[in-house]
Image (tube, rainbow, N blue to C red; front, side, top):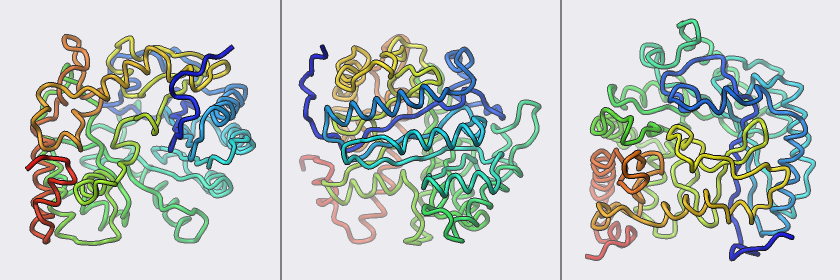
Length: 397
C-alpha cells in the first residue's frame, strides 16, 4: 500500500518529464553534459527507448493525475538527439501518450532537436500531434562551429539551418501551431549582441533563449565573462524595442521585476512544490534535474522505475527531498542580495562543488548581479519606479 505524504491532493500546476527517447547523438558538442562532462549513464543505457517504457510513462501520468490535481503534463522528447529514435517509433510514442486518461490535465508535447534530420515527414508528425519544436544552434557558422561539430569534426551549421528553415516555412504555412524557437548556449567569449542580431535579422527568428552554461564551481573557468554576453544582448534587445521578439531569459526576469505575481517558466526557474520536472531515461528510470548528472553526485541516482512509481513516492524520495532542501535554503552569501528572489542562489548545477556540495551561491554570481542590474536600469529609464521594482523583488527599502 502506498502511504500518501503531505503532498497528497495538492494542486500541481505543471509536471514535466525530460524523456530520453534516444541516448545517442549524431553530433558531438563539447559542452554536452550528457556525453562530455564525465558521466556515462547515457552511453550505458539502451540507445532507443522501448514502446513498453512509453506505456509505463503514460500509466505513471495516469496514476499521478489520480493522486494530484494537475493542470499541465508535458513531455519533452530529448536525447541525445531525439529524432534518432526514428519516425515510426516516435509517432507510436505520441499515439501512446495522447491516449492516456490524465483526469482533465492538459498534455503538451515538445521536442528539442539539432534539426539535422528534419524533413517533410517529420514535420507531418509534429503537425499531427501539435508538438512544439526547439532547435539548438549557437549563432552564425564561425561561432556555432566552435562547439557544435559532428563526430568527424565537421560543421553541423548548414544542416541545422536547413532544418530550421523547413520548420519556419511549415509554421508560416499553418502546419505548425507554434513558431519554432532557438536555444543557444551563452558563450562568454563572444558578444551576445552579435548572436541576437543574427537570430533576428538573418535567421528571422523572434523566439529564442540564451542558456546559462551547465557549469559548476568545479568546472567553470570564466564566471565573470557571462555578463559581457548577456548585457550585450540585453542592450540590443532594448535598443530593438520589438515587442514581437521573445527572449525567455529576459522576459522571465523583467516580468518578475514588474509584477510580484509573475510565475517564472520552466527552463529558467527551478522545480518547486507545484512546478515539477524530472528526467526519465531510455530504460524507464526516473531522476531529478537532468543537468545534475554532470556532478556525478549521488543525488543523480535513480529514484525508481516509472513502471512502479507513484508521484507521491517520487516526491518523498531522498533525492527529491535533498533537491527541494537546496531549493529552499539560500546560500549565506545570498542573504543580503537584492536579486535573491529572482536568482534563488542559482540553479543546482551552478551551486555545486565537490567540497561544499550545493551550499555555495551560483558560480556565475558576479555576472548575474550585473545582468539583473542592467535590466533594472533599463526599466527605470523607461519610467518604472525603483520603488516598484524593489517591492516586486521583496526588498525592504
